[in-house]
Image (cartoon, rainbow, N blue to C red; front, side, top):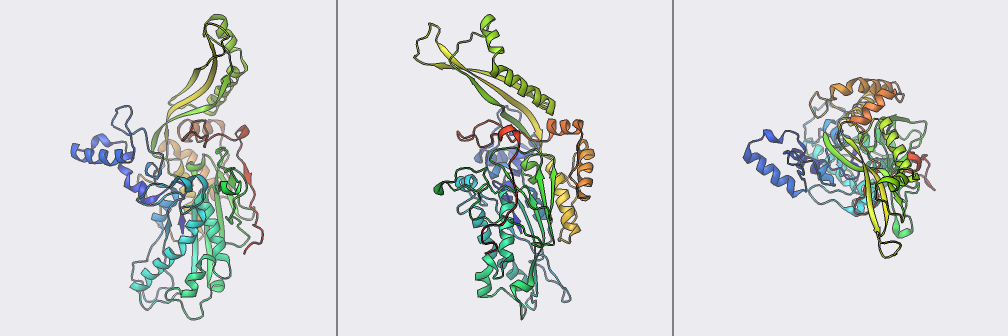
Length: 479
């Protein structure tokens, strides 16, 4: 079972894959014309005329395939195979569209904003039984003498898809089959005599990339998407819920709306370098990151000519000094890499107060970031999850040595260190030089002050520290 993340969709990413290539100039003119027509239909834009799209749509059509989608591709699938008469097991796979997305259709903003509705977390779990039974029927149709004596799940998820994976696991663990109850009443295909859900269904492996449930319920007064309440979602992973639970978390994520829903200490939870999608994937190979990286600060009701005495007053102000300190910290972190930090001084006239002939102004002080940033960091988390799952008998094919899975040469020393530590059950400790290198080239600035549709959806949490919520059972669990 593969539950994709918010804004991630395997099919939609595949449809626009050519748009994110860096070698578009190598196509012949006719092919390039067709590619451009497709890409511009989905709001890809080439703003600097270099022949590559540097402005990508803020939708599932602008993302690369996530690690959940890539792992889905690597999982063995025998649903359309004729199995040997002596076979004792067969592997099947089911992919669930990411929250707020539908393959081949527009994204659903309500689902992406709240985690609710027809494309929300619960809806994705509720639609999974029909997909599972459909896949089972394909296997049985090709193998009419086959009887199913046992069902064992491997479950993977990213972001809200990880929340869906946890909710799904809790449904599977219910004695009556949970969301599968209707299928049980109708009869699952080709069940062996004496098949009982409680005795013959189990969970082998649960692999989670950075669980962020972030459920918003404004109709019931819950307007804090970064809060601990996630009504209707059962995230609790009790002891023994699976033979193995692995949770890979983003050590550098600190957005207010991306609080982490942890698992308990009796499971394996490892922090890896990077922000949310540096773990779960979905970032294009190369993007131009243009964001307000520093908190905007308003200097109120004062006119500054930016010359002589007036400029001296401004640069001595608390707001100016705070921005300078913020810039120093970003430089210390390793930014801006191959780009630049841009000090922005924006005059905001204050109308009609009549203080002086020159007029009065507010001054908005901000700090921008403009740089290229690479997307391959998520391949480290993919390899760790693949190795952990394979070690615990999940039915994966080996990771191929193809460009989609390759780790760049300049990243390999850090990748080896992180992977080796993770396979030993530890979160890697990187030195200052290594962390500066990652921030300069690979770790995205997910926490920023740029607005999206007029909202600060990516604003940092106070003190740039992520909220971490412990794993607790819901009232009345497991009912």
